Image 1: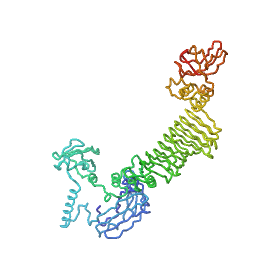
Image 2: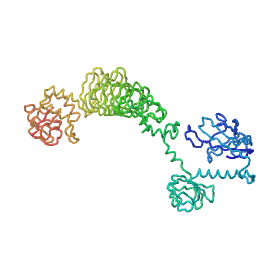
Image 3: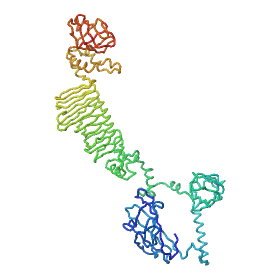
Image 4: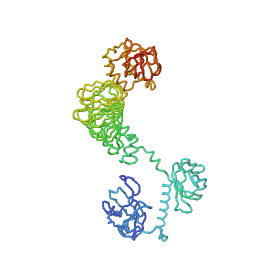
Length: 626
């Protein structure tokens, strides 16, 4: 800026933008008051070779108000955001120096910055036509003209006009380089010849030196360009900047654009929003965007938590083979990995997800954590969800609900309900393997809901509680006072084997009762299952009366009647209703594996009325009468 010495009532205009700490750095800052400069900041000027002079600010009535030394006001937050007027005293511009520097410092809490204004002070007004034309002045003007030309040559690759116009994205230049690469990626500024206030700019897509043809990346769309419009070609600094090697010595300003790019180049990223932890291959550090990235994992959770807080991240990717001991609460987070060890260390894991870990120790949590694809080994847990995991060792349960789904206990886990822990409920679906139960019913209302197949041992410490079974189980009950509820499809394999053994029919030699047990354990398809499987009532009757089982032959019948031949080697009874309520389980012929009730019996004809079977009873059939 150039000002004639002795000018009075000068108002200067500052452009204030967000600094590096602002949420929108480089963008205009609006709504500032004089107090945002005066309190916690400063306004001042410094004449060449002199000390800084402080300027006391005050508010102006409007942006159009008369000059008032120290007056300050925003111009127009809507149409000229970031522009502020400040009235400087006449003393700043008096003759005697070549320049004066004007400065506003915004209070630090506003996260804003204004560039200083440098004012060149001249002895005459360059804008008037009455410049004294002395020899010295003429020489000075010649020097200025030369400087302007040199400045143009330094700033612009070319200053020319549009010679011909093919479209709003293609035209030829009146003057231009013959080199095809001369204006590659340069910026074209076009000034409307009929209205110089209208300007448009766009990047050069291609340039052909032979024809001086410019093709723009797209139509600037500001005004309709025409032949004769002024053209300024400005070199682009973007590609020059991009060609500079990113090094710590040249790009190390914290949180700067180039530093962030260098971080990506050297340290990788927080891919998927994860902080990477690898206690085998990682290293310590707490530098944001450098430590804990996929290329530079951390070796400890203390540093990982520091990065997580600084960058508002909540996911951790754990390297294979890592061994992590928690030293702080890890609430509402996710730990993702495979084949790693987690030692919970008594910390809270409220609403946190753990994947792929071998889990040890004690954890707490106000909200249930979830363990997925884990190996749970000797743990004390709060209310939680455990999915598709292996269970091993002593599992100490909380008061509340624990959900287990698709979890196996191949090496024999022990569920510890606790002597003084009140009201524990276990929902275990798709169970398999073997599990022992301790202290069920010792305190409060304990419930074990379990569906699947395997072996359950209730130890002598179990003195109550409710067990709801659904599936095929071998149950050993060494406890007392337990209430067992079985789903209609539940089979207590051990009970059937015990009853069969009582009558000596399970001898490993394919005896009758042995074949019954084998058939009950088979899993036929749906259609066959419906006709072969006894109802719940029938099955209960079979298990309760296994010791009465006797082989039966037939002499004929229909699908709803059966004429009995021999029962247990002797002729069938001649007493009416003698076999009413008994069950026939066929084990040979076309009715093999079907079961049916006897609803009536006529002793004189030895004919039993039965619930319908699929084919007529003939002498080729045999059965077991229970």
